[in-house]
Amino acid sequence: MQRDEVLEIILATKVIAVIRMADSQKLLQVTEAIKRGGVRAIEITMTTPGALEIIASLAKKKAADVLIGAGTVLDPETATQVMDAGADFVVSPILNFDLIHACRERDVFVAPGAFTPTEILAAWDRGADVVKVFPATSVGPKYFKDIKGPFPHVRLMPTGGITLENAREFIACGACCVAIGTALLDKEAIERGEWDVLTRKSAALIDSLK
Image (tube, rainbow, N blue to C red; front, side, top):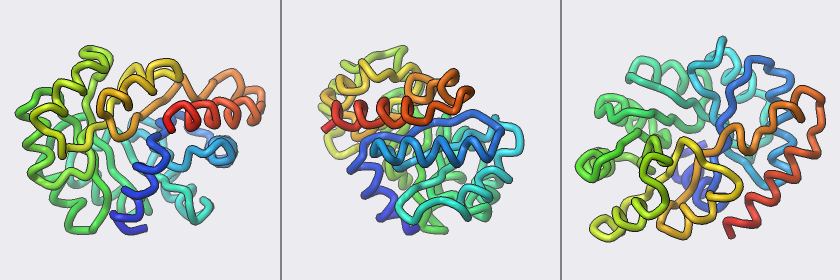
């Protein structure tokens, strides 16, 4: 999927679900469950054992309107590997200009990490589609409102400590989307195969962000 199409889906749904689990079969079921609730972008972190293989497997099996991306990508070499595996988007906790360049060369959506105003603007000016602000809970929603004052054109995504309860506040303060992990992906429900729990949580989150 092309970069603009990925951006359109992420901006429309306002959510990237961050998953850290190595069971590819359960991952596919998780993907289907949260898609039924309206969440269509799934990030597999590179700290997950066998992440490349999981991304490649999900990329082949996913529905056409679902996005499979890679998170915790730290360098351009890894970015190239995940893109080769079929990742629709690349997310990093750090600001690495070469990583951004590698993704733009392939027309792949990229969200590098930044924290200070200088880093945020540098990431945007170098070609970030969205700037990941991490860790977001260290500053809270008001920080996003403050940043949007001088940088109204920069798309920001809070990551770290996002919950079903505070996600809406981050959006209201200027974030274009949120990245959310364990608060959405109930580990106990996944373990028990209670996929309807994930669907309900996803639907509630999507509704709250509209």
